Image (cartoon, rainbow, N blue to C red):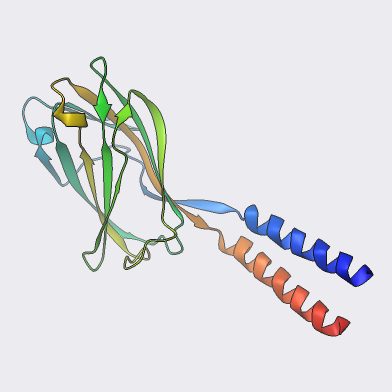
Length: 191
């Protein structure tokens, strides 16, 4: 009976450690004094208002718009979640669909969209655990887009604050691995 209690306690401890595994954010862009390489569609039009501030990048426009930005070699190996911090405002009833495309060193695109967002402050997230065929160890470019709902006629304002990828911290993973190894060794010695 004592052995079963010890085993159960160890399993619960590992489950708790795994659930609370420390995560670190790898910043893709913090939008501080952000300068895109190219603007497209309505964001490139004279009617759009673009403001590159010290802590955010803002666009005020109508209709579909997008930008392209070379980010360099960003290593987000083991990525589990994409997080976009953004404020959405504009004319009454504004609806916007922020879209983030990540492009790796092989030119592979992965698209993450959050259609139908109303006015407010958001941290929009996407689960990356099931993404295959993308090299998170070498993110090269981002393509940010906005698809306003039904291409409404009103103006939307997007305030991009932060684009990060959550990855497990190596130290946490190492501790979990050591704990599992210790359990295996203890179990073998108990036999």
